[in-house]
Each structure stands twice: as structure tokens, then as C-alpha cells.
Image (cartoon, rainbow, N blue to C red; front, side, top):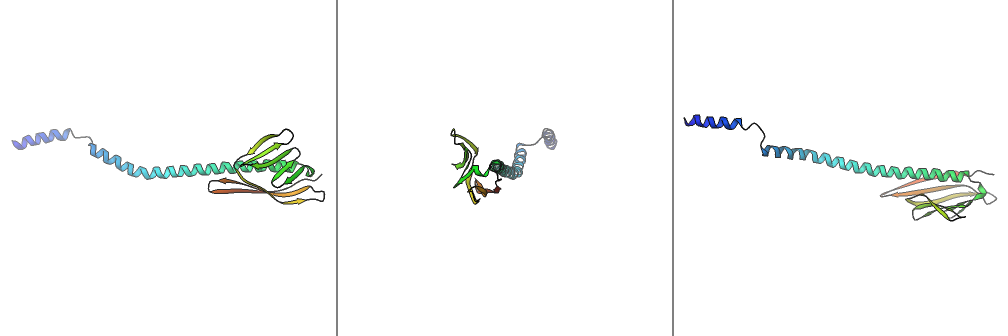
Amino acid sequence: MFSKLIKKKLKKFNINTCGYTLIELVIVIALIGLVAAPMMMSFTTGYKLFQTENSSNDKISELRSFVSEFDSIIRKADRKDIFVVGNIVTIKNNKYYLENGDFIQENTLNNEKRVMTTSIKSFKIDNQVIDENGNLVSADISISIDDKDKDFVINTSFYIRGD
């Protein structure tokens, strides 16, 4: 009789225990966390690397665009209108120079300044070739930007058309 009573109680107990216990749920959540944590770390590291490279690519693209624009300005000018003193280029009424990391185009008639690009680390003009009349014929330009731990340099050479 005692065994029948125990069996009856156990049968009733077994019917009511068809779900998961709190301990089982906590263990499953902890295991999911252990698996997901390294995946999330990998994802966030990859995302940060992507953002850094994307920023660098944007700066390089902006620098290339600027070099192309500046190169075009120089190539379209006449030899007699271009003067280079140090790293300052004067073309007709415009001076081009680096000031505090900004490359400036300054109109010498009305002193208006326009920032052509920013984040420039250095601007150098080398290997100038001067003709017999004292006019600039060709030169090399080196422009660099500083992007955290990397330096990006673009070099270009130009030849100025004659009269």
C-alpha cells in the first residue's frame, strides 16, 4: 500500500515536469554566451579594421583628386605666368601653398583664400627645369598625408606647355 501511494505521487510528479528547469535554461544561455563571445569579438575587430581602411581610402581618394586638379591648373597655365619660390606656386593672380595642413589657393588681387584640401603633411616641389628665359618648364611635386601610423605620398611630374 505504501508503494502504491509512492507510485501515485511519483506519477503525479512526472506528469507536471514536462518543461525545462531554471538551471537547464541558465546552462544553455551560458553555453550560447561562450560560443557567441568570440564571434562578436571577431566581428567588432573586423568592423573597426574596415572603418579604419575605409577612412584611409577616403583620404587617399581626396588626395588623388586634389593632385589631379592642381596638376590640371599647372598644365593649363603658360610658362611665363608660373613662378615657384620655395614651395609656393604663383600662377597669374593666384598663390598656392601649404598652411597648417591645408592647401590654400589665394587670389592676390582680393586676398580671398580657398582651402583646396586638408590633412596635408608635406608639399614639395623638386627638380625644377627652367628655360633660357627664366620660365619654369617642368618640375616634380610630392604631396603626402599623415593617416595615423601610415604616410601616403603621391608624386607627380608635369611639363608646362610652351607659347
